[in-house]
Amino acid sequence: MEYKTDMGRVIGLGSAKDGTREWWIHRLQSVALVPLTLYFIWKVAPLIGGSHAEVIAAFQSPLTAISTILFIMIAFMHLAGGLQEVIVDYVHGKACLVILLVSTKLLCLGLGFAGAFAVAKIAFGA
Image 1 (cartoon, rainbow, N blue to C red):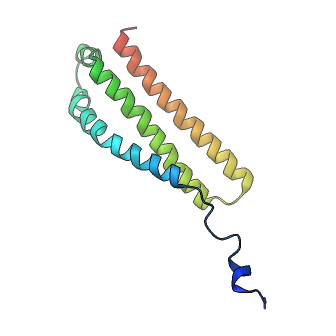
Image 2: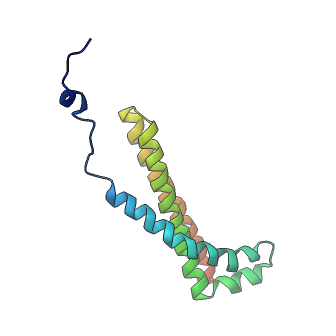
């Protein structure tokens, strides 16, 4: 049986005075993804099954290329933030936590840049 005061039981369990910044970033990314996703569905989704020339012509439009790159980058940043929250909540080992956080960030960053590079390569016709 422990004889701790109420204060002794709650010390170390309170707010870390951190997290507001991440919350706002996640919300802003969500808001930014709404019009970008709608534009992506409107302009890019119909290209599935289209000819090579149609896809090239669509992505050579600056608005389509830029909005697609923004969609890809913000979506992967949003994914990385969401996965970080899940990992921090459910992984308890320090070494495993660090390895998962770093590998998740690097994977999302790499996939985002690969997608942006692919769109840029199509847009510039290289």
